[in-house]
Image 1: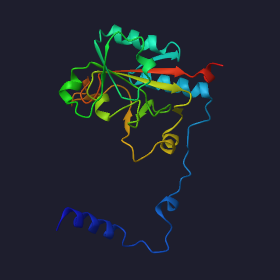
Image 2: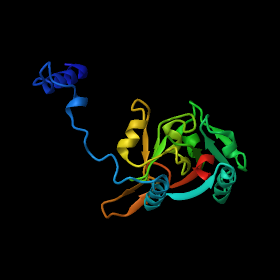
Image 3: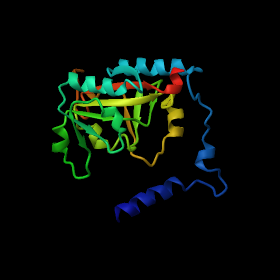
Image 4: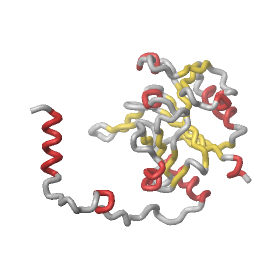
Amino acid sequence: MSSRELILGRVRRALADVEPGDPPYADAVARDYLREHGKLSVEERVELLAENLADYRAIVHRTDVERLPHLVGRLLAERGARQVLAPPGLPPQWLSAVDATRVDDRADSTAHELDEVASVVTGCALGIAETGTIVLDGGPDQGRRRITLIPDHHICVVRVPDQVVSSVPQALERLDPTRPLTWISGPSATSDIELDRVEGVHGPRTLEVILVASAEAQE
């Protein structure tokens, strides 16, 4: 028996008691749970995201569109970055004040080549305030998942308030489940049996999140 036949057999057995007239799964399961914990204003939602990001040991910065390039340049300079990895759709102005060589992500880039670059700058799909989570979906300003997992330092730009939602249910409504979703809650970390925390095991050791206020949000 092939693996395909084995899996389909298990599916058929699991569905054996489903009658032809039964409602589809999407309608049969109640969706009456809370969609968010309290009604937050735009300012409260952004503040909660910043607070929870910091709780997860991400370094949070705030700026506006005009000063964003200078902030990105300063953060990379403070780390002594000589090269910065960038996805193909990253807005050019974000790196306009960076004194480092831009390294474009290529399909043939090896893990060793990516590991030679210490920092990566990306955008995001959205941020979730209640959980302090940043979600990437492989969009043009985010690139492939591997470029945010191999470099030791990740600068992620979040446009506020447009890209900030309160809760996971709200996030799922805005995300495309067919895209390669990466959910990030702070720097990569793990703990051994003695609960000693080790960062940078399966992702960047340092996560810096820049909350960029749109022109409309500043009015």
